[in-house]
Amino acid sequence: MTVADVLTAALGAVALGAGLLVVTTRHVVRAGLWLVVALGAIAGLFLVLTAELVAWVQVLVYVGAVVVLLLFAVMLTRAPIGASADLDRVRWPGALVGAGAGAGLAALLIDAFRWTRVEMPEPGTAQRLGEALFRTWVLPFELVSVLLLAALIGAIVVSRPDIGARAAGRRRG
Image 1 (cartoon, rainbow, N blue to C red):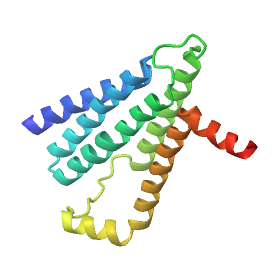
Image 2: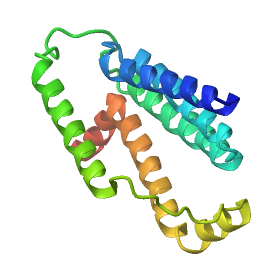
Image 3: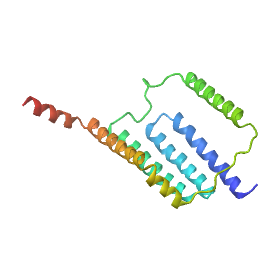
Image 4: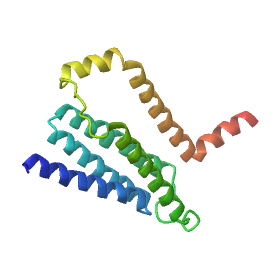
């Protein structure tokens, strides 16, 4: 067993544990912080696989932008941060559906690939990734950025009741 194998197993366990804590914690802010840990562990997995560019993109885009946007949206909308009695439900139906979906996907993958070897494409470089991103995927990339900006503006408008009151007052007056 090599050092890379040990690091992969350790980072995978950290990512799996943090992912479970994201969906089982009752506090939204703590769930966001556990999401940072899970995404950081996945970035570490990319580093072990010698995909440094993808690891840094993971850190910058997901940890640096998406999680911060999630935490700001929670804070701006004044959503309940702690546990809420009216939102607690019985967990076993969701666990049953999740386990069934996981078992179905595992059976599908085992049936599809059996013990065949899959040929891997040649490793990519940062230059090839940049060419693909800015030639073929530039429009979806920009659309996602506009969508995130609209979501942030919407969260600000929803969280500030004085903006809607001023607009309604101008219409009456």
